[in-house]
Amino acid sequence: MDFPRTTVGDQSLSRLIIGTNWFLGYSHYSVAKDKFIKDNQTRDKIAEILEVYLEAGIDTVMGPMLPIFTDAVQEAQQRKGQEIKLILTPSFNILPGGEPENDPEPVIARCKETGACICMPHQVVTDALVDRMHREIRDIDKYTQLIRQYEMIPGLSTHMPETVIYADETEVDVESYIQIYNATGFLMQVETDWVMKIIYNAKKPVMTIKPLAAGRLLPVAGLAFVWSTIREQDMVTIGTSTPDEAREVIDISLELLSNRIPDYKLQRTRSKSSIS
Image (cartoon, rainbow, N blue to C red; front, top):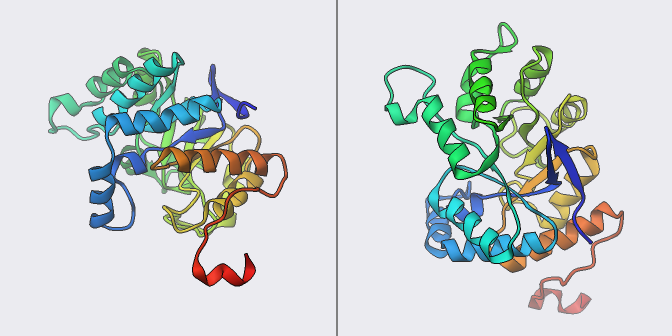
């Protein structure tokens, strides 16, 4: 069974999106955990994980423009003979005086050259432009126009709940939003039920991120919450560090989307011997 799909702009995407924090060393735990991830991941290992997703019809991946990641995407595509829908979340200069190669147009051009079909400026860009006083996202049109100029679909990555609301109110030219959403409220700026309503009312499909609160929730607990409280057009982005983790996430998600209790192999420890 192929994974359910949705549409963003003119692109058909898998509703489960492959995240990259566990490829690239962004653990949201500690420097030591970041180092562990980086020391253990290689281009080939990442490509192996991507292959598992492709076999399940999950062909959409989101991340920054870093060579170990983008090279692994190319490797997985060549191995499987399948296209991967690449969503890039670049950051770039929004004030004068920075390095010229980090100005918006050169960065957006590199996103296109790298193979992105969707370009969603990272929250370090987006959230710096949010103006709560005037309920707008300053200067965002010039960046979305550049993204369109380079024949990619524009979206916005944000950690702020206001971003979705203001973009909708002012009819910003974007086709999707990235929004943190998990049952613990981890890294969310307001309560979970507020973000739930914002996602429900969004005019465009929403790509939720951090569904397991960076490993603070068991997969079945975190996924059960997000899959049951988002709309059919919305997506869940999740990072995995091994092929087996990817298979587990896929299987659990498919069971939950079919309204079944997931049936998967449980951990075995001595303390559970009396209930085995």
